[in-house]
Length: 115
Ligand code: FES
Image 1 (cartoon, rainbow, N blue to C red):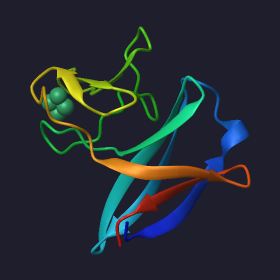
Image 2 (spheres, protein in one colour; image 1 turned 45 degrees about the horizontal axis):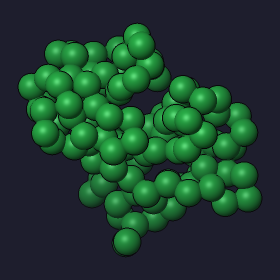
Image 3 (spheres, helix red, strand yellow; image 1 turned 60 degrees about the vertical axis):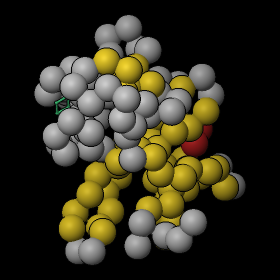
Image 4 (cartoon, rainbow, N blue to C red; image 1 turned 90 degrees about the vertical axis):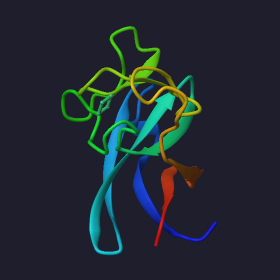
């Protein structure tokens, strides 16, 4: 996949159920993304709801619903599956978050973002 890799954080510094945000630019426009660790695996998405393209964290860097089972958009409460990014409840039901490739290299979380 074309793109460029950015180092987000050390994997061992991100506890399960926690997230870390990062920024990148696409065609000169500022974008935000986040990596979330869930059941030992890492998932990366653009921080942009599929209902209205707004950031989703209800408090800075807090993405999960109160039960910890879904990514929740702060604006209208859409719920997204953590592992697939698919919206299962709320206005954009059936659509999916923009997923970014993530891997761990030498203990670092590496995300591939668009050029
Ligand atoms: S902006 Fe996210 S559910 Fe409406």
